[in-house]
Length: 248
Image (cartoon, rainbow, N blue to C red; front, side, top):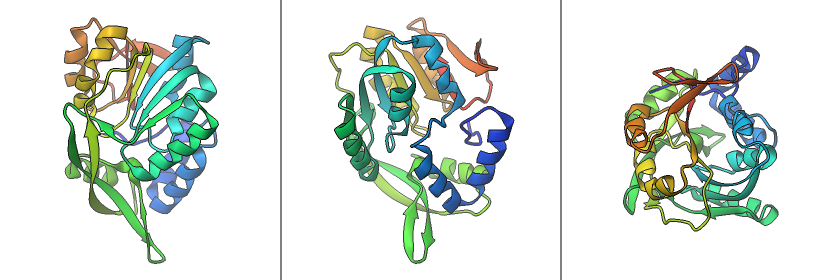
């Protein structure tokens, strides 16, 4: 399900962010700066209501440059954050974060049902002869990326193909309380490989709104229900086009 990417529900912030996303270079600058703030997707702030000040362990799939890990550190009370990120540029930033925050545990690969090399597609722009990639827009399906670019950008970036390493999830000893998945279309396979820890620990999941009906069929067997956030209240999710869906 495609949606225009935005982080905040407040109308003023939506207008600002949609404007920023129209031009790739402005989005790149904004995205590089925003990780130093507490600006984030509104759905995630509700996690504070769920966990209060409880000490928790988190799995972060699609950890990017650590933006979500930083959000968890600022707003929740994480004991360990297992960060899975296949892009080497972002992984290096996670390593730097680990030097400051010892509870960040980075892994330089994505998660999938089996170990393999996966094709991905991402946009890029040329600026003064230098190629600048928008790796936050990495998609496993080119057609889906093209649709998202058309939805978000006024000035259209070009598309490049690359490869990433993905692995089956290796069960961790720690009890997992929260799983976040944001991978632009690979969520079903990730949920499947995480089933051992989901069955064992029954964590809360917050998942980008892609292929949610398929994911719900899997999690429903484990007594999960799905929710979306409206006016800071969790409501039963049917087919609402929210950015993220919460499973409890």
